[in-house]
Amino acid sequence: MPEISAEQVAHLATLARIALTEEEIAHLTTELGQIMQAVEQVNRVATPEVPPTSHPIPMQNVFRADVVTDDVLSPEQALAGAPERDGDRFVVSAILGEEQ
Amino acid sequence: MARVELMDYEKALELFEPVIGLEVHVELNTETKMFSPAPNPANEKYHGAEPNTLVSPVCLGLPGSLPVVNGDAVEKSISLGLALGCSIAASSRFARKNYFYPDLAKNYQISQYDEPIAFEGSVEVELADGRTFQVPIERAHMEEDAGKLTHVGGATGRIQGAEYSLVDYNRAGVPLVEIVTKPIFGAEADAPELARAYVSTIRDMALSLGISEARMERGNLRCDANVSLRPRGAEQLGIRTETKNVNSFRSIERAVRYEIQRQAAILAKGGTITQETRHWHEDTGTTSPGRPKSDADDYRYFPEPDLVPVVPTTELIESLRAALPEPPAARRRRLKGEWGFTDLEFQDVVNGGLLNEVAATIAEGATPAAARKWWTGELTRLANASETDASGLATPEQVAQLAALVDAGTLTDRLARQVLEGVVAGEGSPQEIVDARGLAVVSDDGALIAAIDQALASQPDVLEKIRDGKVQAAGAVIGAVMKAMQGKADAARVRELVLERAGSGGA
Image (cartoon, rainbow over all chains, first blue to last red; front, side, top):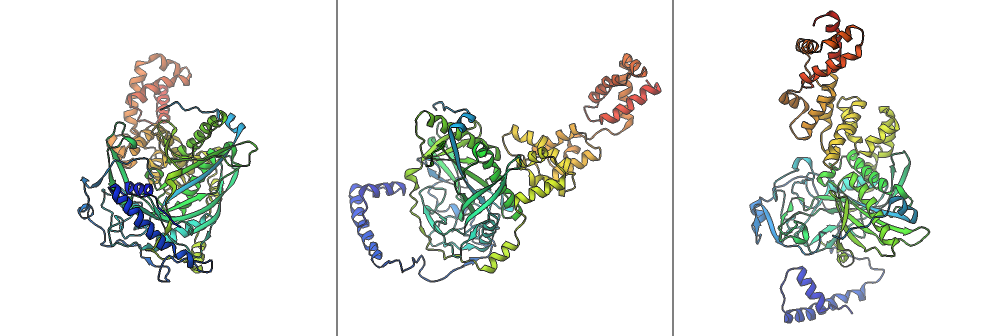
């Protein structure tokens, strides 16, 4: 039976920079636990004979030509949704811990 | 920081066997990124672009954007896999590596996990003394690079003290191939040199395949070095550390050696090694701990649902295999013969990671001797002084032009060294620097004779000696003339003229 603890929910919320109250954490712990249990049902039908599927449509080799297109954004467009900017760079809060 | 104890290197090798593992990231030089049609800053053409000018919605992980695989990047990855002696996967897929860090806006990196494009290979690596090692390759997989963070504020400017960070997503999505070795046993005291030689071999490979600019100082080629020690006779592997940020050939060698000495000192005292990421500091030649490995390693990999499997056809693989260039170790043996270098001379070139530079300089018209001399001599000296690699200081064209100016008698070696300093400082081509700094040799005999006559007149005793047949006395006059000409004269020509003037009684 898959489970998620209140501590794990709180930890993930911190990583995702989502502020949660104690009540919200308790609520989400219950809800996420139920979702995980629902997904867990897949394990009942997943037998060694059934190959894992990562894509609903059996497709392969979808490639793009190595050519620059007009999808490229201007810095103004790129930064349009930034909560904060410094020149043409995004500003993010202090990083806790070390670099990846 | 507490003082770190290091064990004498020979002593450490007596007590422990070093086992190393290397992860090398190669940035591909495709026109566009791995999963987006934005220009790729790892391609020479787009290097140095202004922040956030090489981004598309995919690079920023904007809602609704979808990645599409760059077909050329896949072909280049397969070529590299084949050059590493790997098998190419009949079917390969991408996976999400989840982590929370703002260098990727999506909160995950698209990488490969259980189905890498290439696996199980072997690379022949040659050490300086000609011995060869087969380095076993575990896998080579495709992934995307992350954006670049600049940490601002804080007492030390180091990341822990940073108040905020600035993000440039130009590098986010650059195609990467990560090459992972199996644990390398048996290198013993040569482990640091082997690590360096291996990365140098990968660089040669990437360059001869034409798949990467492969410049370490730009981060096109990056190395993480895993080091562990086990007591002599022990079966079980020791706990390893992973040193990151090792961005020059010499620092790879130094970092591995440092870790061997550091870990040996801890183990000999009965301590245990902490499994962790460590950061290399070029300035102090030391490593310091980063985050501990254990709890950060839960990346919750799962198959990337936005991408379909890559299933390369046999025809594609075989056509790429047929187009593979000569393997680096074989090429080295061939070039050494062609250039006529001694073992020592060739080692200098190889150890400096300068094989391609020397080859390209010769292709530009320089003699093998001249190409070797400038790269392993003055350029290496300048590189060491600035703690970088010589390969990034000048181009083969510039060095060939310098050699041509020396051959033509326009420059003496001494002047050529000054010109080279100008080249390294970015003042332009050798010819431009000669013109701008007025460094050409004074080839006008009239000006030289005037200076010689003046020097002879002020040193009558020297004149006497020369006339008495004591030719070596001319040295004093030559010195005075060279000084008067500010070094811009060919000493051999000055000597000829001094003897001529003294003999003819011209003074």
